[in-house]
Structure formats: C-alpha cells, structure tokens
Length: 385
Image 1: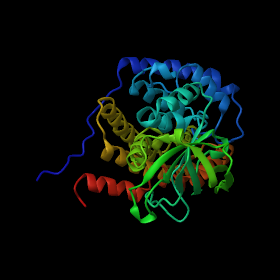
Image 2: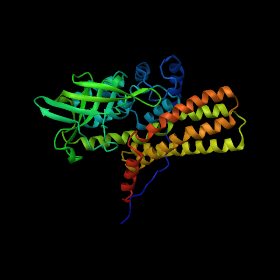
Image 3: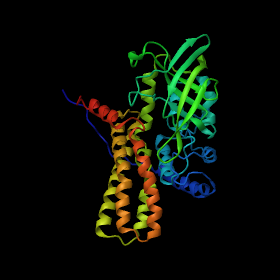
Image 4: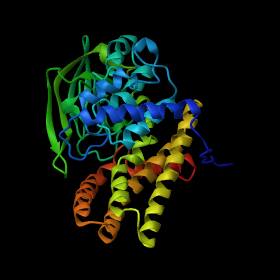
C-alpha cells in the first residue's frame, strides 16, 4: 500500500498579484505614519480600528469574497500579497484580522444568508471585529473536550460555560463559539455546534488575562444563562467539529506563521551595519535562508489552495516549522547583536525589541493548534500513526 506523499510544488505569484505589491507599499508608506497606537512594538496583532477602516476603504479586507457581500472577488494570491506586505511593515491589522482570515470565510461557507448579508459588508469596511471561542479552562489543547453547553430552548439556546485565551474579545463585536448542543462531555466530536454570539448580549462577562509583557490581548469569557437566538446557529446543529476544523485550516499556512517577528530580523540587519564579521554574516544568512524556505513552502500551499485543493498536512508543517523559526529568531539575533552591533545606543534599542519578542514567543506554540497536535496531523496524514 502506497503512503500519501508530502509535496510542496514550486509556485510563483502571477504578475497581476506582484503588481499589487507596489500599490500596497505606497498605501502603507502614506497611511502608517498617521496611525497612532499605544503599542511600542507594533505587529499584525496590534489593534487599530482606524487602520482597519482605511484598509477596508481600499478594498483590501474580504478581498476574495463575493461582491454581493462587499468583497472584491479577487484571487487568494492577491490576498497573499496584501497579507505579506502588512506583515512586512508590522502594520496594526489586529482589529480585523480574525474576521478577514477565518470568521468571514466560515460564514461564507456555512453561515445563513441572513448572517452573511448582515455582517460581511461591515467586516469588509473594517467596521466589524471577531474573536474565536474555542479553548476552555483545564482542557489544554484538547479542543474536543467542550463543556460549554447551549441548551435548546424556545426560539434559540441558553448558553452556560467559559471560554479562555479568547484573543481580542474585549474589542470585538462577535464571538464564534464552539458549544455542545446535545450529548455529553464524553461524546467528543458529536453534538458540537457553532454559535455567532453578539458580545453585547446579556449574561456575558469578560475577565482580562494579562500576558508576560503586561498586555491585555486575551480574555476569559463566561456565559451565564445567555440567550442566543436560533438565527445565530452557524450551519447545522451537530456539525460544529467539521466546521471548526475547516476554520482552523485558514490559520495554519499563511505568512503570519513566520513573519510575526520580521521586525526583529529587520532591526538586526540595521544594527549590524554593512561591515559585518564573517561569523555574523554566516549566521544572518542562515536565518534568511530559513525564512525564504518557509516563504516558498507557504507560497506552495497558497498555490494548492488557489487550485481548490486542501493541503492540510502541508499547512500543518508550515505552521510547525514557522513556530520553531519564530521562537529561535530573537535569541539568535540577540547573541549576534551583542557581539557585532555597531553602537551601544543601537544595541540598547534592539535588545528591547528582542526581549519583547522572546516574551511573546511561547504564544506561537498554541496559535492555530499546538505543536504536538500539528505533528500528530502530519503523522496521521502520512500514515505514520
């Protein structure tokens, strides 16, 4: 019996996608200096409603979506270029990111026409933001161990339970929550559904979770006898596991999985200057080679997706290797800068950046699925377990 093959066919962005790059760079050069954020170390996770609205005005949110919902019906590859440029410039795209990357596509595929018509045009305009209610307390990476229950009642559901590590819930309009609508906790994948929950609904409370760098990015979201109308059910009752695993596929292979720390590499090149030692040049070259390899793998996955195929194994591998790279980068860069920086002032500024990235790096392990889960997906996909 032949085993499945792991393939990353070479892929190049078409000329029309590359032509878009210059427009995005010009927009960012003009727009970013006028966008104020409270984050000293901006990245794609930094929220800025003003920036999201400006990006929406250019038609660069929901780019691949149908025009009837405000989208531009552009290719997935055009979207890849815009995403890459936003990450390269550390643009503060955190407000709309989840809605654009996964919640909107989820509604396009499984949502009702009422949901799509009411919400997607607002997302495209950069005026509607989403959070994801998957993880729960004491569950670790076991997504199927859902305890939050949505009891069917006349006209809808009564929701009770808690979600944790809910990114951006305190600044979002909606939460897509994975809940158990039937069966018992031990049923695993059966009886799970997804609900589109307005975070202004009575019975919802948010508790901030402050991370290692003192930022309020995550939340614990508790539902206490929260009534959610039946119209907020996404797809069919009981299809939640199928839907949520489809949604996770949007998270795993994009350039954010290896470009989140690009500013560290950019600053490292600056502080090393043009006259670097052979050792520094060699180590810097290895970092850039790893980055380029990850980009080529990610581009290959983008090409597979554009062709209408489902590269689940390849996407999981890109995310796993991207996590390793992003966690290695700050420490390797710090060692290089301390030995080869051209000035003490440059070094001090760089070490602040590297320290922030080091403190944030543990979070990369769980974003889009933990490292162990992703390696299990790869092993099963290749017939190794």
